[in-house]
Length: 510
Image (tube, rainbow, N blue to C red):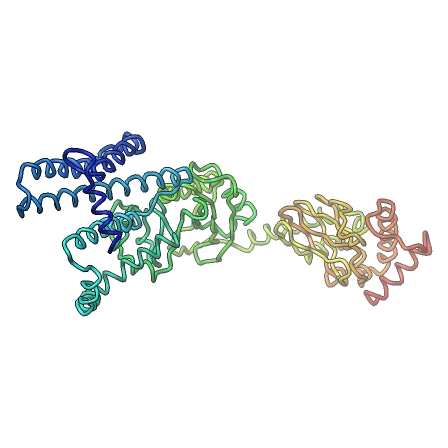
């Protein structure tokens, strides 16, 4: 109480013919504000200046009245009150613009709620001083109105909840003015934060509709902030492609298309996922990154357009939603001609392999009929070192890498291309795979199994001798090229051919 009285006396203390130290303090604060407040915000000086001038006018008018008059006392009280309000407003502006100047350097603004709290606190101090001067005990007022305060508190429960939720939001800063947020699972509830005030937060949606959300609702919601920690946001687009289009080709086409779209970031790079096999076709998800979240729908439209054009140029139409039944008239002659053509292609591929060149035409044709054609994606393991196998593989299209498991990890020893083959020893003898073979690109392989070769050797047992000689020569070539590990002691020449011949006859029971 004594401090309030001293402050009042200080404000009334006489240093001029019309007033006291309060006028000097008010003038000093206004002068300082003149240099602190930016020129663009000079209008904020109007309030403290008007209050100061009003105080001076009241002091001057009260000087013409006689001592002891109630009007003179009222005017003096009002003049000091307006002077205190002017000083309080000036101090608030001085503190506010000083803090704002520092926070702007770090890209942050002082929250509006805290600005209001500071201003209300300053005016509350003025009110406390004025009440004390009038002889009113502010402390007894607060104590005596406890019941009234409780009633008001209950009636304003929701409002107070919003106020405290707003304070929590400003303190924890889950979002700031200018951030793009989504405050529930509904994508329509996504927008840019315009203002965070005492009661609610104003949000501007992508449809340019302003939505006011109570702070209490935001405090209970799971908030997705698309502007933090960085403006980088990943978006998705889906598209369908025909079943007869290899996924590796579609992935390449879509990747090249989306990375060139305006608004899509090149880093991190977009990626393509095969996500479903539907009745219409294969469904692919294109994932890409953007920074301009307010343009997300426009960028998404550009991405979908570019994907359509990419598939159209590649003659890969998007499968229509309706089912189509295609009736193709085929006769036995057409079917037989198509089958003969496919078998002839396989037969020519087999006869380009030294291992099968000794086969007579009839047996090569029979083997071609039972040879399987398989398609592999990039990066697939065809055979694994150490596994048992009974198949030989011929590269018809693409490339495969031959890898050997050494002490220091997998080592690349060779790359096999069109008309090269692997797995011949496992086919003929059933021994373990000597290396791992992995596809380097999309690969089409011709697969000759033991079941396909069995009737050939049973019909012509003498072929086993020629095959054993070819295997021995092939093994020598691989050893010379260091494609497979060579034991310290190994048989050579006729002895090795005889050994392989015995193993072939035992394996095929001929």
